[in-house]
Length: 148
Image (cartoon, rainbow, N blue to C red; front, side, top):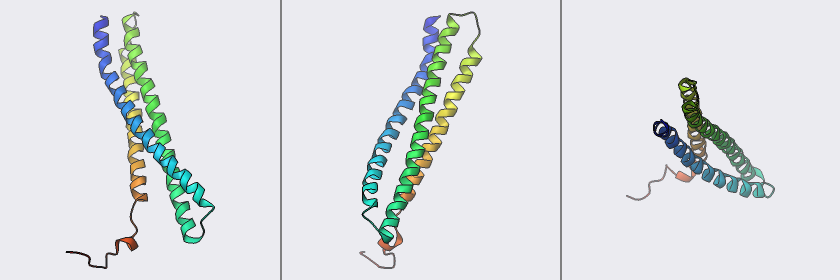
C-alpha cells in the first residue's frame, strides 16, 4: 500500500519542482528590480525637472513590479505548502481508517489554483516590465529614412 501512495505522491512532487523553478525565476527578477530601484533612489535627490520626473516614473514602475513579484512569491510558497499538505494527507490516509481522498483532491486543487494565480501575477509583472521598456518615439526617429 505504501508503494502505491508513493506513486500517487509523484504528481504533486513534480508540481512542487515546477513551483521551485518559478520561484527561482521570480527571485532573480526581484533582485534585478531591487538593484535598479536602489540605483534610482540614489539618483532621486540629484535630479530635477523632466529628468527627475523620469526617475520618479521608473521608481513607481519598479515599486509596482516589486509588489507583483512579492505577492506571486507568497502565493507560490502557499501553493508549495499546500502540495506538501496534499502528500501528507495521502500518506495519512494509508495509516488511518478515514477516506481522505476528497480532502487530498481539495488540497491539490487549492495548490493548483494558487499556482495559477501566481502565474497570472508573473504575467502581469512581465507586462509592467515590458511597458517600462517601451522606447520613446523621439529616439526611434521614425520620420528619418536610415539605411537600405
